Amino acid sequence: MSVKNVLNFENYRGMMKALNLKESLELLKAYDIPVAETYFVDSEDELERVAEKLSYPVVVKPNVPEHKTEIGVFKSLKNLGEVRDAFKSINSEVAVQRMIGGYEILLGAKNDGQFGNVIALGSGGIFAELFQDVSFRILPVGRADFYEMLEETKLSKIAEGFRGFEFDAEDLFRILKNFEMLVNEENVIEADINPLMASKNHIVAVDARVILG
Image (cartoon, rainbow, N blue to C red; front, top):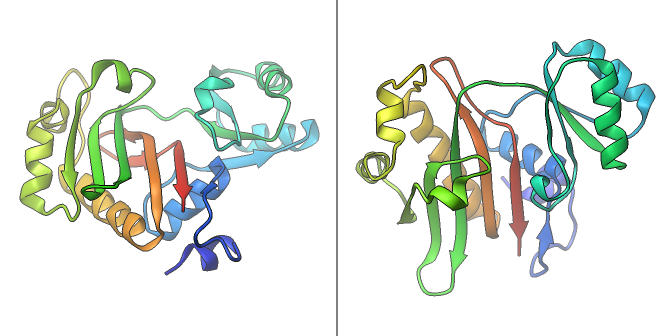
């Protein structure tokens, strides 16, 4: 499997390319990483058609390579008027998703000049950098390594069930191994799925950022 087959990039090897949200999510799906149902629209007419397909509340975010919060992520939008206002505020192609509940998990990777590919797993969301509830391992990550990473973060408590949050650790391990395959095969410089929304019934990526080199 290759990103050139998935996204039809040509001659990208050796050149840095930051994927936008649409490209990043397509790459995750190609590696069997569950992705939230997402519609990409660049006109108000399309926006109205998409809004009719989704049940409110919804999220509207820009389809860009940068971190979305730097431009604006609009959550819990309850009607078409709020969706239109978010679209006008972003003023470019947007992604529209249904709001998904769950605990926010960060799954990331970076190519380190000394150690090679390093993976990160921990609590995600907009406060991930602030709380630093993250564990790191050099790839490959085995099952024992994975469960050690859970124990080094709050994720072990969440997996067991805490204040309404719960998820299947084995499902997360399968996602991590698919992500590991993506990182190894696609010449990834840096990537993060933030967040993976984790609940008893699902673990699904709602946002991602990938830089290839």
